[in-house]
Image (cartoon, rainbow, N blue to C red; front, side, top):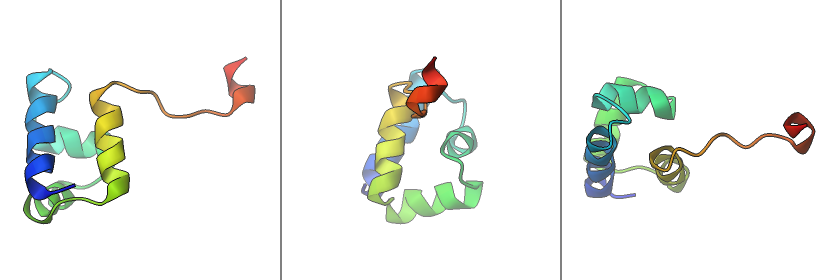
Length: 69
């Protein structure tokens, strides 16, 4: 994920009302505010890009089948 794409995701999360700030987006990702600043500069790895998409589309974490009953 490029730095530009990450910045676009941050803006989309705010626009959709899913987060109020970059720091809130970081909390949703489980990373520090400093990590968000770094990703805004250098981009993010593939795992983070997938997490960003999942958060934007309001997907829940994967659970084991036995947890579904």
